[in-house]
Length: 451
Image (tube, rainbow, N blue to C red):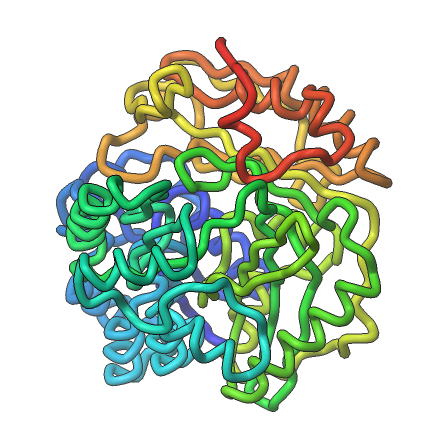
């Protein structure tokens, strides 16, 4: 096991990694930008090192600063968390070159799955159904027009190099294609330094289902079941739950077996998430793979009892998985609500500023109520980063029990000083359609909500 790990991230995921390090008796070195240097959560780390100004391009995305910090503090490994450099193959390669263990997949697999068009083609070749669309990146607007006419509107244009909804455009007709293609490509260039787009058939009223996997360096690949992530705003997840509603144990086992076989065939290592769309006709289409820990990993941890972040570290340190697939069990139901500093009434416009009041329900990392956050009262949310305040996660004996617990916990929260998604989350978990599992990716677009 490592003696010291550099946590190359910030906010709630940095707190989460620090906690996992301490549970493994590993020292955690936190990094901070100028915007974060007064953050209370840094006190949880064993050491803190300053890496640059507020803008992420000058700090959390500054590879030289992070690598120098790791060397200076004699770290043996770097955990990238999610976002920033978590899926950057060049950064993973540079870690290896400096004899630092990158806690994540091998650079080749980050590169393979990081290009979404290539990932789709790779998974198609190993037997997973993929969404109809382009097999490679779109070389021109004309090619996009021809392909869309062939597979039929509506279609989705997606950035091949990234995620989080950046560069994604829903196109309903040929007359909408030009503007969406140019805007999507421009946004992808700005976000990922890569303007390339690919195309998928848009499935109306689809559900977003994803599978969590772990793979060690000894050829063992297991899945930890599925998560439902269909409640989204601007193509970004807002609420997740595990297991998915109405997803049978038989189907979980069948899909899990296919996924594990596919990842075994390419020699995958570490944690990862396979993302799918489930059509109204129950067809499950592969979309992409995320080669990192997911924001929504806590719901899987609460229903399986397996610490995913700790196992990321253990696998990177060369440990073998301590359980077989048949030993994985799912107990009860878990729901996660993301609390973001943004205004749902203004198209989810970010709301940076000081949090003047921050009252939370009693919670524990083991549940049944869990709060993953870096925020305290008087914390200032910087304008440079993701707007997440934290994640409220609950576990119940069944889905109905979990919903009641989440409703009660959300009712106890008070956040003042900035606009948040709190009231929206209260509405979602109290909605009759949510109660019966009758929702899909278009849920928020169909309902009328006002604070």
